[in-house]
Image 1: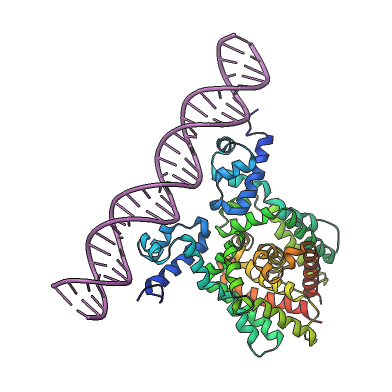
Image 2 (image 1 turned 30 degrees about the vertical axis):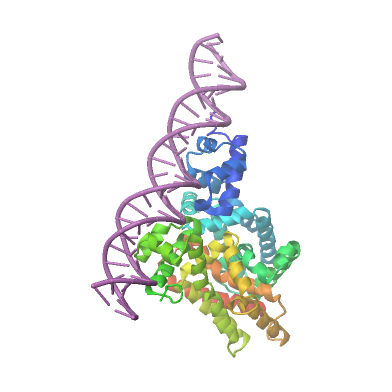
Length: 208
Length: 208
DNA sequence: CGCCTTGTTAACTGTATGGTTGAAACATAT
DNA sequence: ATATGTTTCAACCATACAGTTAACAAGGCG
């Protein structure tokens, strides 16, 4: 059986290592040698499993691009009030970021370089699959507005505000940690504060 | 007169070009040749004015790192209500991002790579200067809470939420534009919506 | 066994890139 | 005019990097 079809041990090992290195350094900053070292294999093996750097990068992206969206997808499809859903998304998304910091970093690098790869992947599954998660969230917001559960807001803008205030926290942590040493010294405490603050400010912002 | 002391035409030209290229590609992705081309000079000139890539990168950062903070600094020092200040910061910061997109990008690249350069610069002007702008903003939030002008919130977390929801919009635009074509097709309209939405949701979120 | 497929390796290649050099052009002062 | 310091450039160098090659090992199978 060719390695193309299945997913061998080595292949997932490579993807894991590549996610780490691409996440840390970005596509340009990443070195194939470093990925090989991280995966504990020879550099030539990378080119055996993945033709070249671009292919590997795209493979990594396909492997993880659903992480964030699947959280949103999961919470939006639950049978629960808008209030519960909002709390659920905030908590779950923050936890997801803590557990997979490299995914966040990869996404940001990708956005900075024009998001050509992501866009192609999203186009492929236009409307269906995880790519539509933000759209579904926007729809749930619209419904909640109609039901009078929350004030009238622009669904897509609120979606961006929600995701932004969650993601930015991790992204800007290096700089903010000079102003707020707790981020480094008591990360769990700050995380709990963050969850509470975000729900507090955003839900109150939506309240009538 | 040596070029070290003053700031010649060429020097600012280089800094401008370098900001552009570093902003687009990041420090690793940027090519000295490309910066030289952008500045319309020979590559050797870069090394004449700035010893090497690291020096140039840091010079660019020193040249622009105050952009965002100066907006906050300006708004927080005005004699106005908290409500007006919040509106002022949102509008001015969004405008600043539109006018200087590369500064935002440079900051993000810097954060992704550990923010070593920024941190050093911030440490130098510890407590004083523009670096303390977020701290001043947090102080203004604290005062407004004490005066009963707004609900009780964690000042630093609110500062991060505010900056995050502003900055993320530009950062994630490449991806969100697939879900919200208006971002590309009617940018001014979306910008106006964004200003209105952010003030609306955040000020309401702070209201008693 | 002989032979094919899959997986693995060290050594190699071509090129892009950061950085250097030495000389030419230019300005300014004496 | 000559001297002194500044700005510009083409060509060059060393290195680091993505990607290649060719040989080799291990297993399946006629």
